[in-house]
Every structure is written in structure tokens, then in C-alpha cells.
Picture 1 (tube, rainbow, N blue to C red):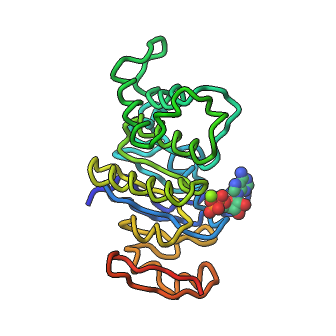
Picture 2 (picture 1 turned 45 degrees about the vertical axis):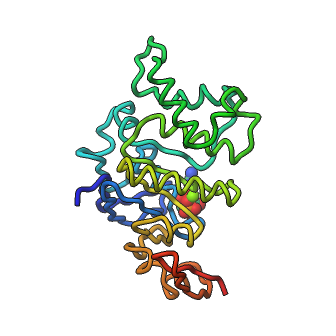
Picture 3 (picture 1 turned 180 degrees about the vertical axis):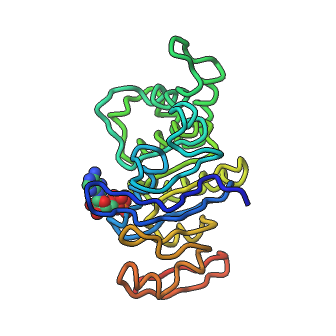
Length: 258
Ligand SMILES: Nc1ncnc2c1ncn2[C@@H]1O[C@H](COP(=O)(O)OP(=O)(O)O)[C@@H](O)[C@H]1O
Ligand SMILES: [Mg+2]
């Protein structure tokens, strides 16, 4: 099993306090991996280390064949696309231009987009149900629509790895399901490796090959959903009582809060 991402002994501090404490993690190529854990457990910080926005204090993160800090940003962007949690809306581009920005790793400094770039952007908008928004200002659409546009932009990069930070947090349940189904289908059909943070345990159980459960900057447990999301682990990490229920239509169990 080859790794898309390999993290060895990652330690990270914002100031003096350890926020990530010696994380070791392998994300297999073509897998769908969800990171779960309470607020403040270090999920976003981990993703930002992986995409080279933050620099580890100790340890190494390998993406593909080389450490992430060795990549030129365009080269990294061809391999890995990131959808961050909060989307800045200070700028006033229309949706189509925002999605086309995903082609930046492929377009030279004084070149303009080619027809093929436009086609890829259009396909990404169609996949995320944002094509009808293409002429609207990014400022004038809803939070959920903006989240889908940012996913469209990421897909336009044609990455092998997609990092998502709470991609469904501002979406209504219809689009929560649609976005995760889309991610899962790209994962299966295009072998896109997905590493996402999520809060919804049941959706994570349903769509993930592996779950990484974090608490206080450490990985508490990782493995198949049914192994990780047990009554005891959930109690230990979230301090809530749950019941684990098996539904015949899903492979992985459902978690019901008591
Ligand atoms: N820019 C920052 N400066 C200092 N501390 C931060 C910063 N961002 C996050 N933290 C702290 O790091 C810890 C982990 O945060 P974060 O990675 O955002 O957790 P999560 O995404 O799991 O909610 C928290 O204690 C948070 O307060
Ligand atoms: Mg976060």
C-alpha cells in the first residue's frame, strides 16, 4: 500500500505550547480518510501543516515522493488541492473566475486560460452544482454555495489529493450528503485521495475508509470506522454517551447520542 501522505513524528507549536504532539499518520493512495475530534483538538492545524501553510517544529511530512517543504507551490498545487474552512470574501470576483483560479498551476504568468482550462472549470462547476452561479459575484452567494464553489475550484486543479477542512459545515443536509457523495465518487472513480475533517460521526462512518480520531493534539485512535468510533472511544474523547446501532443498508454502524 503506497502512501499519498506520510507524517512522521510531527510536532507543532504556535507559540510554546505543543498543539500537535508527535503525530504519525499514513494516508494510503486512493483512500478516503476523515479526521474527527472535538473543537481545538488540532485538526485544522494538522491540515495546515500538510499543505505547507504552517511549518512543523519537528518531524517530516512526505507528499508523493518528497517532503512537502521541498515543493514549489505550483508543483504542490498540481498534486494537492485544499479547501479551507473559512473563505475570505474581501475580493469581488465572479464564481467562474474563482473556479478558473484553480488552473493557476498550469497557466504561465503572461498566458491566459485555454479552452481546455475553461472546459475543466465548467465540468467542476457542473459536478458541484454551481454552474448556474457562474456569473454571480462570490460575495453575493450564500455560505453553502460558496463552499461548493471552493470545492469546484479545488477540483479544477486536477489534484491527486484533496484536503478539506469541514467541507460540509455550512451546508444544509441535502448538500452535506451531495458533497460527500461527490467526494466519494471522485475518490472511487478517479482514485482521488481524500483527507477531510468532519464533525458528523455518522457521515464520516458512512463515507470513510479510515477515521483518525484526535484529542488534545494527539491521535487517539485510527483505523476502520467500526473500530475507531466505539462507545468507549467516543465517551473518552467527546465525553458523551452513545449507542452504536447497525442498520442493514450500511456497512458501518450508526452512532446515536443518548
Ligand atoms: N493561529 C493560532 N495561534 C495560536 N493558537 C492557535 C492558532 N490557531 C489555533 N490555535 C490553537 O491550537 C489548538 C488547535 O486548534 P485547531 O487546529 O484549530 O483545532 P480544530 O481544528 O481541531 O478545532 C487550539 O487550542 C487553538 O486554540
Ligand atoms: Mg478546525
